[in-house]
Length: 270
Image (tube, rainbow, N blue to C red; front, side):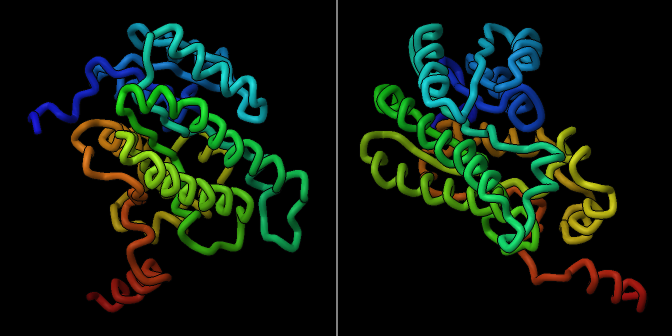
């Protein structure tokens, strides 16, 4: 394997949810490593702003609830750049109002559940379906953003976490069905990541609870997740497919309540 296998020279990538947070960081990093990027987001003005600071980037309006919009995103990218090598499915239904409404199953609104699955699962499926013929042609790959919540039980965000778990299974299914066609498919599972949206949605006290369970001395930021995505999208990860990379600062790697144990033993001077 060449020593520069981490590079993305000559490749074309679509990043959904690319107007901010993890998506914008990933678009900038992939561009720095040689890729040409299409930044797709429902917030088209913000996507244009991000694209304007990246050489040869393309901004695309994307509504994941609209099948035609998702298919047009892929078609527009291929028409503009002539090929497609990487699909990073990063967009999801987020925001403070959504986070507050997405609680436990007993109090779940059917409309919120349906919309979460329409955006996160159905939208991702349509994007993969539209991209796969082009990815077969280029021996390309898909990287899906999921969540550490898809791997754990929690008392909140039942719709979001279960939708992300569905995407994990979709990841494995595509890896299995298309691996011998030269297409890889992986997922990155961030823990709580310090994006502007998260700062707005979660009170500092709740963020502190998660930070206490993190093995690093701080929560991750969008650049941390972008590095994992860009690695999986590169030839350096050519032997990795059908897997979920947990990029959560070790938050899911230990026994529950580690923060409480740490405080106890620190109080004893150990």
